Amino acid sequence: ARLVGVLRNSVRCASSSAKHARLISTAKPLRFNAVSLNPALLEAAVAEEQLRDVIHHWTHKEPKTAAWLELQPEQAHLVSPAVNCGFVMHRCQNNIIHMYCWLGEGKSRIPPFATHQIGVAGFCLNDQGEVLVVREKNAVVNGYKLPGGLADPGEDLARTAEREVQEETGVVANFAGVLAFREQHGVGFGVSDLYYVCRCVPSTTEIQACADEIEEALWMPIDDYCNQTSHMNAIVARCVELGITSDSDQPVCDIRSLELASVVHSKRQFQLFVPNAVAQAINLEDPWHGQKHETISLLPNASL
Image (cartoon, rainbow, N blue to C red; front, side):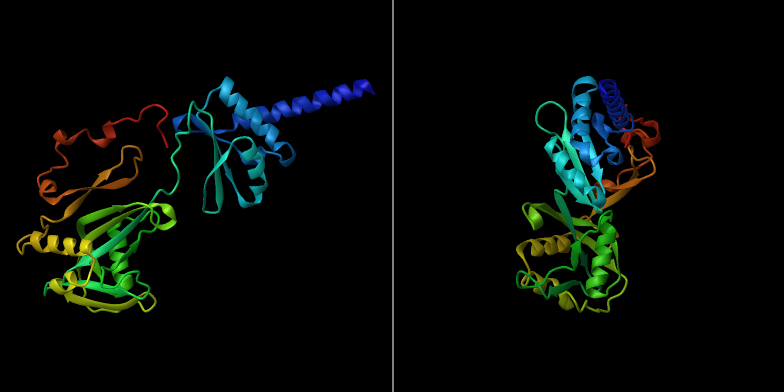
């Protein structure tokens, strides 16, 4: 009987060691020397023990900066043992719980999630020099404002400006450039807010206001608008007045966008915004403006 007990313990130890080794060998390497665990290998009854074992391994034997867990809703029972082992919540996104355990030296250097939100407004002028404005049904302050709203995840500023103008007023407009932006902290859910005002050129002028959100939408002379809007909005409107000239398709008030290829994501593009006066003088093919992206290599362990 004693021999049977010893054998059983040996089998358990061997099985535990195998699972421990598998958790480590199947972990996905991430940037900054971090790893992501496969939660399917965690067993509810011994999950805490398993996690403590791998944390010890990545702290003392094969040092890592952090270990991540991505849990589906049906794996939510693993949250408690993970917290007991030092994991903290990072975010819940697309119905997936993201947790991490900092293993590096000192205080965690992993940035918090969702620190900013992006708001975009469209500044449209018609041929009579009138600006397209709205008055919201659920406005926080009195007066008129530009049509606009929050950008959707992965949505460019240009697309947000065009979409919001059309959704709120029915006017179809094309993005021309960024006029100004504002930074403000501690807004919705305590995050910081970046608000961009984009100049858009209307291709239609007929107004069909959104019945759910907009109390009134109209074309208004800039002077009238400045007397019935916020100080910030009035300043932007006056800048447009000063910056637009009739003989230029790209007014000096614009911050123009240049599309460039990403160095890190080889198949992606990004928008670089620079003052129009500078953009007009730049030849993107001139080697003086830096190496061509395909000649720049990523550093080791920098792949995403």
